[in-house]
Image 1 (spheres, rainbow, N blue to C red):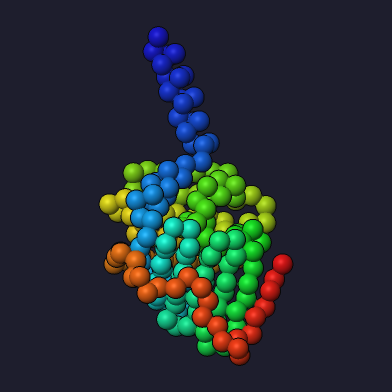
Image 2 (cartoon, helix red, strand yellow; image 1 turned 180 degrees about the horizontal axis):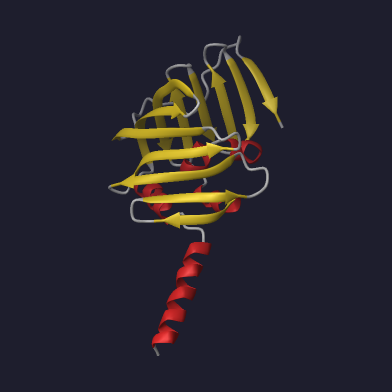
Length: 193
């Protein structure tokens, strides 16, 4: 009887390690459909840091950085990368650029994480996704939660550059936030297919 119990425990535990769990991310998104949050991003190979805000309204995402002045907009099936200083807008379909945007994966399509990583390890406070499939931009990503909100994201890319993003000051979404790129007649538009 004890041997059977131990065997069953080992089998169930190993199945848990194999399955991909995005339930913490999904719960966070279900409970936070519309929000804005400040962030600071640091890199392992540089003393530079980026500060800005992330805005979410259902499936629309906007990541705005103060320096360099850029914004990433995820609006439906398109991703807009807007360099405000150069007044240049790059437009891509989401399928083409999904693997280059942790923001897209986390805040728009968390189930896609399971399409790119073969190993998952979740605890009450964090989830780590590793062992990426071929040609995926990220080697691993770890998401830390505090009070069921995403507090920190650490990811490593294929060039072994580690990025750490700290999220703080969650608030209700400001009604004035636009999820469309602000362009002029002078804005250079680049369409990538």
